[in-house]
Length: 311
Image (cartoon, rainbow, N blue to C red; front, side, top):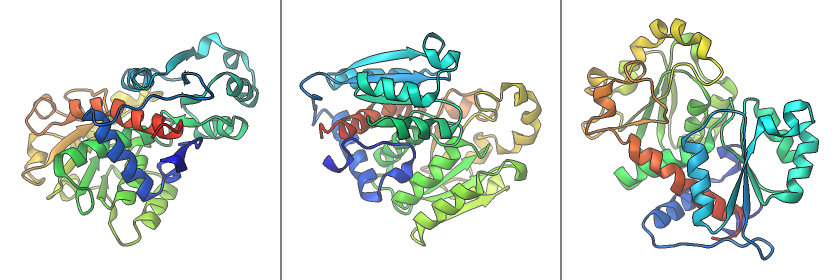
């Protein structure tokens, strides 16, 4: 995928539909052990920087393992130990890190900060989560769906809960691959209208992007049910007040009966068991949560290899 070498991934719309499909195919081949590329950048093993302003388990570990398996190294940058925590401008930090690292994954709050890094650094910048989007999660989600159903176009994915960064990237990713996506949220928690319109433009009649406040209508005959926590990182003080608002959107055994009989359940994790999803569904036969979590590593490994020019 030489066309991706050196590029940023700030949003899934940075990829074409063909590029997204190719990344998923590479990830599947890597998972199966059919291809095992080793990266070299300017004659040395590549160094991936992780600059995380938010807590992380899956993202941190999966990126670290992925770059090691590609023959590279990881530098875990503790935000509290570098000068951005003392007010150094992002533009200055970006230009300095650009001289040391080969690729940089950033997990932060403001999407605009990510864009500033990309503006001032020439190395590839990867969105490892912002409050606006979570594109690497959706790469793994789509890989998981493809493993189960063989193809993507024409399927229906229903997301239930808060119209957050995961919902945004799901809409964009599903639109790119032709999956119908239904976003079921309380009326006051709908996703960004800008992202909705962007997704509908990409879908362009090939698939549907639907918003609703009716969880049962959204779940009806869907092949994928997907949920996330009701209060994202940084919103913990709102968690208790949101529970009664979001309770009708819980992914539970009853809701699952409205979906397709072969439906799978996804959750980006971590989960609050008994809130947005029941213990029974998480541990049930239709749950693909652990495959989904594993695929973070394979999908991001494919992405890193493509951005570093190894595939």
